[in-house]
Image (tube, rainbow, N blue to C red; front, side):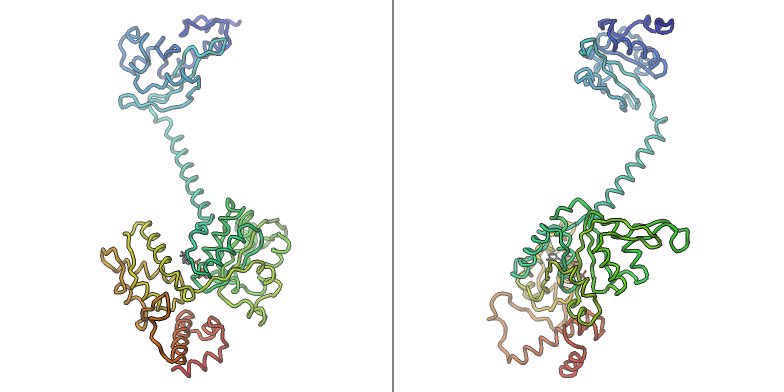
Length: 478
Ligand SMILES: Nc1ncnc2c1ncn2[C@@H]1O[C@H](COP(=O)(O)OP(=O)(O)OP(=O)(O)O)[C@@H](O)[C@H]1O
């Protein structure tokens, strides 16, 4: 044994009961003086957590005048927040801890000590710092990392689906059929095509299918084709390689790369320009994408769901939409009924929406039968989204009330909206069929024009009639 080691071994031992030949005791004994000198205090306890030894600097820190007065006492009698009893009980070290003692924050390390039979015979603790100040850079770095982690988790959560199948509200035969097909879609990995007017719940259902599928733990990425300028669409979908265009820009992943392993939801797919349709078709066929400005392809595993409010059959017939892409996307088709065709769902929809609004902090409000009957007389060009907006507006305008009545809603609906009973036609006034049909046509055309911002070509498309027929009808009805 070297002279130095011998010197260390000869230092008075904090564990007189330990086995001198045991390796652990040797190691502890050899390290002890180093730790003791470097630390701001040191203490040792036996297997009952009774103090067997304490050094001068720890006594000073604790305000203990004579070490002899604390020897043999249970450590928590002298240092109440001490976790030494825990260390001797379970034999696990606590390598770093902050202990609050009389307004001081002590950074401490606690180690169990074993005999040759691996039995815990006590523990030692060192006060590494008697002030957390030196750890400030470390703590603030840790905080920053924690904040980054929370932000990354939030961003990731946004990439996951928010809706489940139970969020698609409706018990009408049309809604039930849509849900049945959605369940079918969740069990398969095929593309899904969701058709329906704006606000009918196409994205709600797409998210719900993803959430119920094998890919639920993977990202759900939505992109609204109509909302992205045409010149940026390709980069948005397939990404950009570093140095493309200017030579200075950084590489950026496209939606396909972001959705890898998960689902890509293409909203308003009918608005996709023809050249991009060709590229999309290639990706779907080959499962590989090529970022802009790159000559390298990357394999992606993406399930595509597409949605549109446009008449894709008609667009295929007129050459505006590629038929081969249409067949690729249209493997499992789900039609979402417009709200006006499932008015029996109005009650449950209102209830679910009001419930959701109240969960977000607004007051709890019920809706009356009369209010629902009034809502049933509206055409709902914006469907469930419009219903939600209207209920939110009504709640904002109505004061304190816990009951939403027809009076609260009347001002928010077009003036000609008349109440309509949902079950049984007996309450509808009997009028010549021709008048009823004419009124219905007038209302449908008005709603379509409002929805299309007065654009007659678009309104005709929404109504599923030729533009010339719309002009004819406008003339006749005016
Ligand atoms: N069946 C439904 N049950 C509950 N809420 C619904 C339902 N359908 C739609 N919504 C609500 O309506 C809003 C619009 O739904 P969503 O975005 O899915 O419609 P969309 O058909 O994708 O519309 P767009 O074609 O304009 O994108 C959402 O806020 C959603 O909460």
